Amino acid sequence: MACLLCDDTGWRPVEDNGTRRVVRCDCWRESVGRQRLSEAHIPKRYQHCTLANFAAYNESLERAVRQGSRIAEAFPVVSRGLFLEGQPGVGKTHLAVAVLKQVIDTTGARGLFYDTRDLLRVIRSTYDPAIRTTELEILRPVMTADLLVLDDLGAEKTSEWVDETMNLIVNTRYNERRLTIFTSNYPDIPDDTEPNSLLFRIGFRMRSRLHEMCEFVVMDAADYRERPDNAGSEDLVALWKMRKKTTLPSPRGGRSARAQLRDGKGDLKWSGGRAGS
Ligand SMILES: Nc1ncnc2c1ncn2[C@@H]1O[C@H](COP(=O)(O)OP(=O)(O)OP(=O)(O)O)[C@@H](O)[C@H]1O
Ligand SMILES: [Mg+2]
Ligand SMILES: [Zn+2]
Image (tube, rainbow, N blue to C red; front, side, top):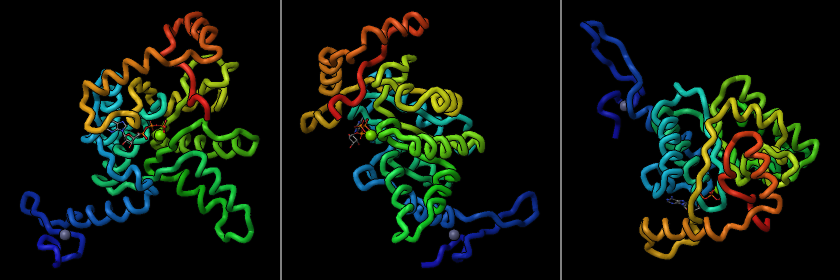
């Protein structure tokens, strides 16, 4: 059925103090949003994710949701993205996708989701002459997307090529002031000798850019994947407290904590990266 407001032209007339003009019809925004959403590469597993169905059962999660909503509601008038850090299963990818979806949905912006390792694999595969996309065909949308989610930063194996490619992506987005949401398992501790630190994984230059581009938010919570069926928020709180108790310090945790204190940054928020992977 044709749209009653615009007869499917995408423009509908409005009257403003006696003068008639046309504006974009809601049906247009909705159909662009749908189209853009299908082009955003959001993995099936995360397509259900919204800000509304994210359980914020402690302060760190509340803060993360607040920061996510700040972007989702104000986009495109937002100057800083997000860096969500925390242990596996705390909901980093969920929250990043939720913001991405809402932004695309409400503004029709060009949004894109990529797992960092997948992205590098895809770019690398374009070196294969049998596959006829060029490196830039993949890179351009990543560099120019209105909102990019780069999931699991730091998990990629480093090499000179990886460093160069990641720097190109981040640098371009930094220079053009494009919004990016990163997630990572690696804690942002100021210790470049600790193999599980973000700094060790991505280097000084990249970390410094990220701090200018993003609000850093530590998500300290339970592994949602381990929750019992029909778990309520008390169960999640209990699981989270148990995790706090049983988390082993990283191999150099003591040293890192001292380094933190020396730098006046207080206690380590959480220790270790993704253990065993
Ligand atoms: N607070 C929450 N409320 C509702 N669902 C959640 C919450 N946290 C996690 N989930 C769900 O649990 C699953 C795992 O969460 P997610 O993948 O976002 O964790 P993650 O922090 O990205 O973990 P990883 O570090 O392993 O990538 C997802 O299906 C997600 O939707
Ligand atoms: Mg994740
Ligand atoms: Zn219409």
